[in-house]
Length: 117
Length: 107
Image 1 (cartoon, rainbow over the protein chains, first blue to last red):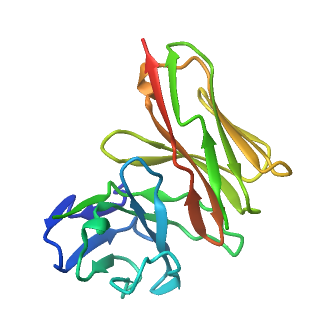
Image 2 (cartoon, helix red, strand yellow; image 1 turned 135 degrees about the vertical axis):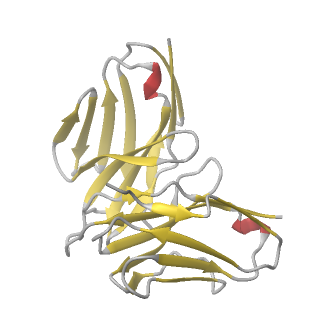
């Protein structure tokens, strides 16, 4: 079956521009996660959706970052007024239905490599 | 603050060697995840465990909840095992990742 897909695979933009990154989770997965991975480091958490709502957005670095999941499936990560420090690989993952105790396998997309010039 | 530390950062092994990668975390967790990342970025989940030990093929993962420590073992290592291995602890439905261990297995 289809895995998690992300588009675009690469995005090059200029400082100050607005970008949108898209994630298509595995069909039926209620949980969706966004992570950011800088070169040579492990991924860092940005935001977690359960259904349509952001259950935890504590990882978003500042108010230039925003994410939506209006119908509980596809999600878009939006970055305003991009800065060079935003350059990273943005990873999306989905999981079937983490319970209150959490602990469900997350399936990762291939990532979007964002480069801000 | 929830911190996850891995060791070693880099590991080079000869084909056939037994490999151990260690992971320590600071906060009580729902589960500990081991993931594999190949060059080009794709991340694959290897294990999710909250107690004891799990085995899949040549890979074994163990966890000691009291000591807040987990290990990933690879038996009879092979060059195709070369990748970055990342541990992550799941706390409050989000993963906190270690920096990863870069493994290179030479033939």
